[in-house]
Amino acid sequence: MTDGLAGRLTEDGHALDVRIYFEDTDFSGVVYHARYLHFLERGRSDFLRLKGIGHGELMDGRYGAPMAFAVRHMDIDFLRPARIDDVVTVTTRTALLGGARIVLAQRITCGDAVLIEAKVKVAVISPGGKPMRMPKEMQALLQPAAEA
Image (cartoon, rainbow, N blue to C red; front, side, top):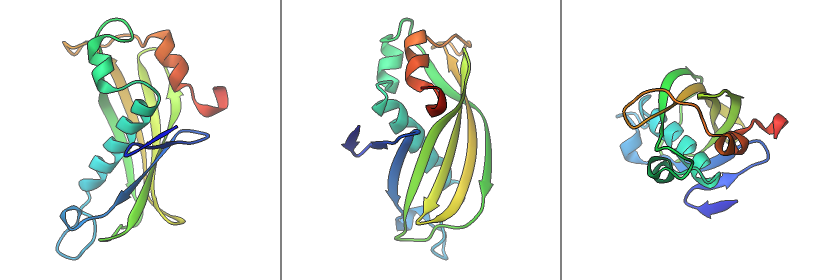
C-alpha cells in the first residue's frame, strides 16, 4: 500500500524516502544529528498510518478507548553522515510486540550505505499518560513480518 507522501508498505514493514534539504544540515552540508529523529518519527508515523492506525484515529477511539503511542526509549547508532541533496530511505519494521508496547527497528540508508540504525520502544498510553494494553485488532496489524 502507498499514498505517495507516506511512503510504502514493504514485505517486512515500511519504507519512506526523504530528501535532505539545507535546513537539515549544519554549516558543512552534513545532516545535523537531531534531524535524524525527525526522519525516524516520520517513518514511524507513516508506517502506522498505512497500517490503518493514524494518530487521529487512536485519539478518536477507533480501536476502543482513546489512546496514543509515546516513545519510551531509543537506541541510535550514527554510522555515516547524510549530506545536502541526498535522498535517504527510512525503513521501519516491528521487531517485538507486547501487550502494551512495541519495539520498532528503524534504519536510514543512502543507496547501499547504512547511515543510522535505531531501536525504538513505544508504549501505548491513555490520554492521561497511563500505560494501557493494545487492542487485539491493533496487535494483529503490527505483528512482526515473520509472525504475520
